Image 1 (cartoon, rainbow, N blue to C red):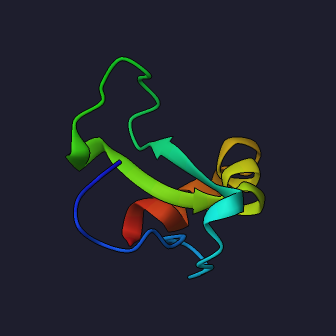
Image 2 (cartoon, helix red, strand yellow):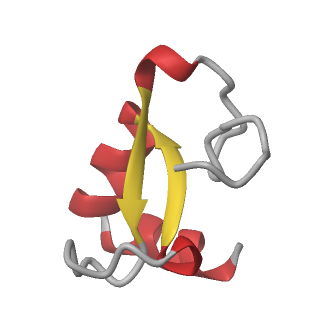
Length: 61
């Protein structure tokens, strides 16, 4: 994902590119518009997909 910004986890602020993933906000893997993609670390990505309350928190950011 290239938007000119340094990739950081939008949830926790982690800046280690080695463990960042791209998350599809609408969960549609076919929708690769930049407005639908955010960087998240592996830990936060897991929580987004397995914790309903955590996903709600992400949508408010």
